[in-house]
Length: 135
Image 1: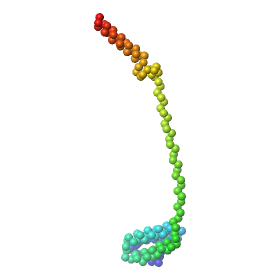
Image 2: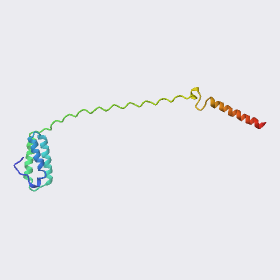
Image 3: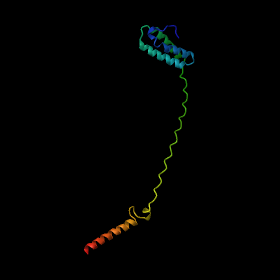
Image 4: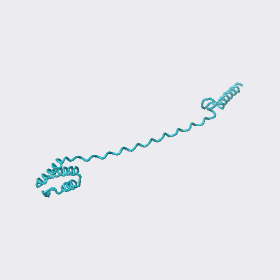
């Protein structure tokens, strides 16, 4: 990692720098560089009085990594989105109601032979009563 030992005040962020060294040796320089920069940001917030030489060494390592022209690894292309499911077919229309006998004779609903006859009977019955009253 470095020739400067980690100070007591930065022991909480030391893990970031150790892991960055492992990644740099393991063939992942971009990830190591980003991790080291993040570790420096955290270490600067700690503001330990003995952290100066250690952080300077980490800054030097970041500058060396930057000079090596580290590029971000190419991203893997995203798979195409799954096709949308086919829409459900519309429901079948309800069957038409069977025509009634009264409506097939061409009359309006409620009118039929029975209604006409019944109307005539009422009239006749009314006439009979009127005639009966007169007599």
